Image (tube, rainbow, N blue to C red):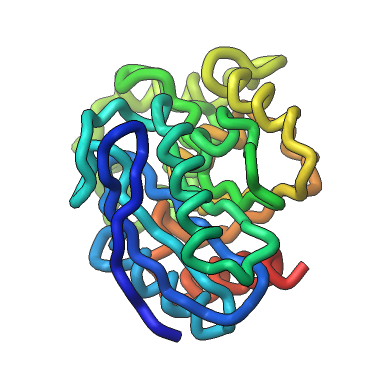
Length: 258
């Protein structure tokens, strides 16, 4: 495995990319979420890419416009379709042996892949897709139940409740939220990404971190019987836990080898 850096063009500006090269004819294009740079928090995405490349599969990471080392305006994930298309073309140019490309995105990067209908990809790995419309959106019942399940297992939290250190009004509102029914059908962004994904003909795998509000919010708006769903119960949003990291790598390699 060798690692090299280069730039490629996207709508008149240059985007920065890193390629972990490997010989396989199937490659992984890693799309970053939010304003995260291609190395990831604490270099996590760089380490993840290295593990995939060590297994024989080339991995391309890049900074979308206005993020990290890339030029241009930052238009957020909703404007990233041209960036993804340009990165896909650059990947195929840099690795001419590649015949299949799997797209991987976490958080709003997964949503961006769905909004773009997975155009140009052979398969998608969609982790904790972003469906939260605003900062003041009420937490889904699944998120509230998970929170209190963990709090009830914490002796310190129970002590605070019994000694009057917990705001009762807030607790009651949260408990009401925990038992409210789920929405009957997706709406808003959840409906948009669902519609986009419906146009994709390749294989799809959803990965959900069981301790992540974003992932649980997605589940609250998605068909839980979808056979494409996989959950790592103790993982947080970026799979920083050692067991979660190993699970994530295994899931992605399974798709790459499929």
